[in-house]
Length: 128
Image 1: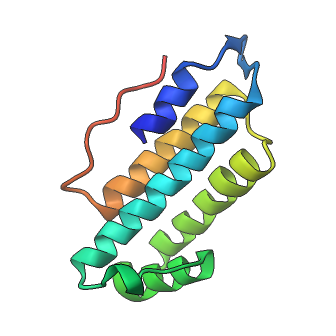
Image 2 (image 1 turned 45 degrees about the horizontal axis):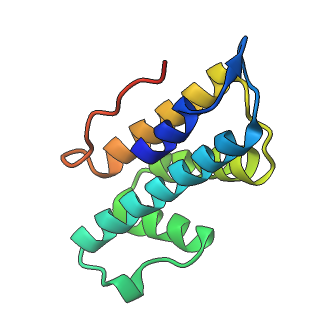
């Protein structure tokens, strides 16, 4: 997440809009990868080996439902929402470039990571 925030800090802003979509898209991609790495770490703590880690979005969703949010589908729904906003809308399609929306998406990514790995999630500095 620190890398994603670094990309956003370097991006020029005019009003409430990022002028260049490329660093914003890269930041979204980086934030999504941070979420996947947090899930991987949580699964490894549950006894998974690197080879057993999910290889697809559907695999991650199934692993969250089965191993990380037993009897509570809220975490899986949050992951699905973050996948749609960070990866699809933010990174893949480049649809999110308004500063408040970007900040909110990054805040949600931070919150999700802290839920997955509460003890190892460092305090993330705020965007300007």
